[in-house]
Amino acid sequence: MTTRRTDNPQLPSPGSPVHREPGFPVFSSVHTFAQSSYTRWSLSLSNNAAQLTATRAYHAIPASDDGSSPADYDESTFGYDPPGRQNKASDIEAARMSPTGIVV
Image (cartoon, rainbow, N blue to C red; front, side, top):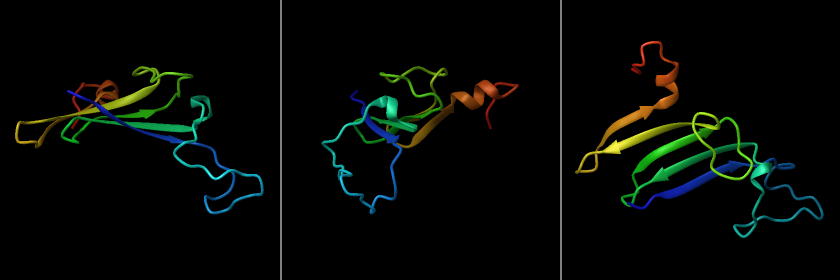
């Protein structure tokens, strides 16, 4: 099974996207940013059928790698039956916080 990643880092930006100061570069997909400059980060993982298999919401952005749960992010996972219908969803953070361990 191949996993596809969709990173969604939120970077600090001076002004709105349409406002350009002299000398302020126009960014494109060829620009990269240091992970240390992220202010928010979410990550979506999907399988070969383009089905969402997991999402991560970061509350602490690690310096250089993907980090680990629960230290850096809260992760929800999703599963599918053979016809492709979602049949599983788990929210690890909610289960950890629930006094009974049961998430409704």
